[in-house]
Image 1 (cartoon, protein in one colour):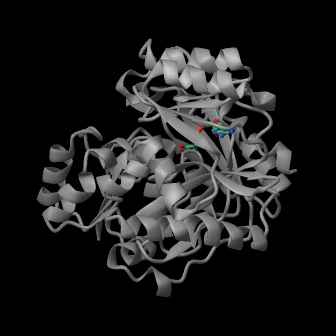
Image 2 (cartoon, protein in one colour):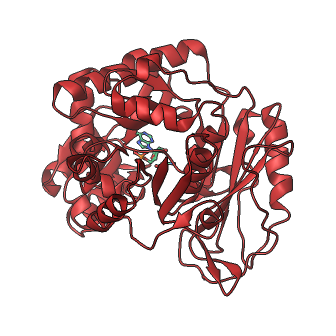
Image 3 (cartoon, helix red, strand yellow):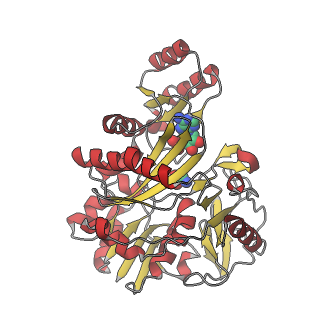
Length: 424
Ligand code: AMP
Ligand code: GLY
């Protein structure tokens, strides 16, 4: 088979690496890819937003299966465009992906499906939003309705901060059109877990759980980022909670979407807070998470092509999905200054070639913002690499990942030293 992966992050490197290990796969292409992906796949210079360009490439090359990493092409309708031409694509339709593209739509779907989530109101009018908050007289979470690259959420600590966030979005256009409508929701407390699942629109099969680290610095301090590291499984995992999340969150939302002509096929990502009143949804994403995917796919023991095809064919219920018992940890190496401004083009020393499948060392280094220039790999983005390792237990996985990253260096390299610490 010929596979096309769309995207250029460490998530897509992990997808390429996993798909390449399938005995059914002859050739993998990646658009646009990065320096690490280029070692395993043929990189194609077509951007993720160029749906027409991606489609014509897939037709020309007679690609058998296309796999989409990031959200933007989903919202642009890449799934429909490929399906119309009879091409197989592992991606939800734009109508289904709207569960990530509009927080207001996601909340309304959850209410109709009776899925537990924070109480909320949606506003387009500043005066009404401010009056609501002042009347309640407590801080709220303010969320831009549309896509804001993971930055559109303010968890306010005071009424003033809540009002400030509302005004920033509605009056001062902080997130442009994405913030022209805001969801104002109650503040929840508890540990957060990421539960990704495969679905064919009827059956839901959860993946092993993971936990992201969104803040830039140790101890969950500093600004929000795309994610500074992840591990699997978090200590909160239990079979009972898994069953509860399946029955109260994942199955009802997928069933509701099918009922509303938004049938969801692909990977659905539930960001959950485990509150004293049970698991509640913080957000849904219409795709694999980054950096969660890097550690989750390390633990996948079944051929990913088979799973993806079963989602597309509607036969997920009878598809075997096996996971490794061994925990995994991934640490993101970022450019100095990220998530603010940072320098690019800095040479990276100490990179290793990845094993085709996991070997005794249990280490894989997934590239994100990297580029090959004159035979040298240099930095090309904020998140540069995710160094991942598996271990017999979580502490071994963590130690192995941190030991492996010691070989790697570039000027200004930053990383968190406490990935997975809360579960150790
Ligand atoms: P989201 O993009 O919706 O996941 O929000 C980003 C982060 O904001 C989440 O990972 C949480 O840490 C936090 N957050 C979102 N919604 C809430 C909420 N209702 N209560 C507390 N924290 C929240
Ligand atoms: N790690 C969070 C996300 O992918 O949105």
